[in-house]
Amino acid sequence: MRDEPMEPYSKPTPPPPPADLVWRGLGVVALAVLALALVWIALRSLAQREIEALKSAGQGEIVVLHEGWAIAAPDAAFPAGRTAEAVRLPDDWTASRPNYQGTVWYRLNFDTPARPDTETLMAAYIERACTNLEVYLNGQLLHSGGRMSEPVTRNCYQSQLIALPSFLLRATGNQLDVRVVGEQLKHVSARQRVGGMSEVRIGPMQSLQHLHDQHVFWNITLAQIIAGVQLVLGAFAIVLAFVRRLNYLFHFGMVCLGWALLSARLWWRNLPLPGTSVELLICMAFAPLVGFSVKFLLGYAGFGLHGERETRYGRWIDAALWLQCLALPGSFILAGPDGIFPLARVWYAFFALEILAAVAYFVWRTARDRKPEFWLMCVVLGAVVFVVGFELAGQSGWVPAWGMNVSNFVLPLLFCAVAVRLIQVYARALQTAEGARFRLESR
Image (cartoon, rainbow, N blue to C red; front, side, top):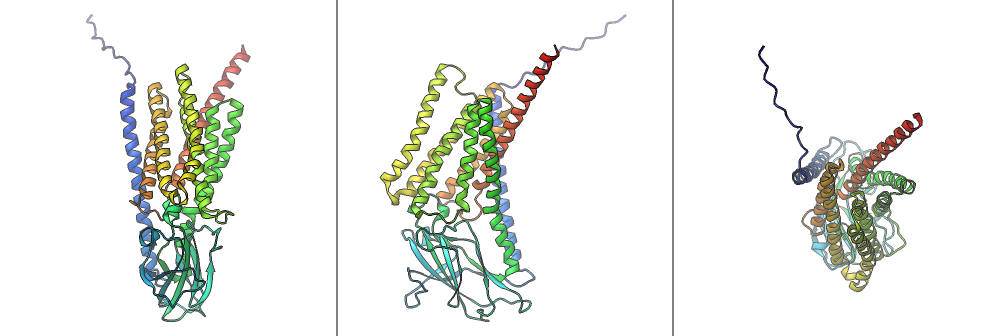
């Protein structure tokens, strides 16, 4: 009887070493950055196509006003006796009047667009007027965004849709005067809140309403929804932290609560403080927020549990994070109001380096310990790299600072993804504990 040849013995494939995992993780990071960049480009392209489609809507032509006249003057009415300068919209005060802070009057001339019938209500749509505005049609006040003197109503993230009454409209030669009060670049902590005004669209109310609603949803409503979710997740994480005695859950809960409160700057328009004080508070709020973020990432990765040396480094890191919370307001006091934006850029870059370093450590530690969170955090790292790069480019003027701000909802969605993972880990641990208890009772 002939013996059959034996199948060669094959050892199970060993898991890849940490170095290979790190390189694969970097590939995931690059793919996440590329994917988010493509999503941002696609969203801007879709928004532009929708605008072009609205221009040729069947309910009437939409006129886009790109040119007008501007006068920097604090007068209560358009200063017709002064010499106005030609201006092209959108007008960014960083370029047109970099050291000016106060009131600018814009006068735009237009003819009433063709309407399908006399019952069609016309409107003016202004995507951005920062910090606040008043609108006059042929000398009559139509709309006010709120307080025009300190403390000024903050409408930088809010688009404006103003109805144009038919009895005030002329067939030709209409004058739309827009009074805008705004801040100069040096007195704000983010370029998105510099004074300026976008182009103005004139057309049927029904056509422009959709554009206005879309802008409000992406810039205000979506941020409010995510902030509500974060409040719930943050409260749940803090309660769970006290129940399970896990510090990193407390830090995560504080990050969620802090970002939810910080996002209120998008829709909380009437604050009882001057503009410069609000800008300082917004910037100072990032210091504890970044501190809790770093503490969560380090704690979740197990930093401080691998010997006395890590514990000692952890105490130094804690001291440094709390020290920066004190150093930030002190640096702004020394710099004065004219140093808010330059100093804020330095602090934002420093905070970005802290977050990137903490995420990089988390990725390295999870790759070394082969934890399942490795791939999730690679995606998170890619998103953080994209958001940080986008924000720094926006503050430097390399990309448009107006329009939809991706960081307002990308980062909160990342928090939600991490929260889902934390809930999964807790549910699995609870299930394992219940199974162990059942087995002990059955004995």
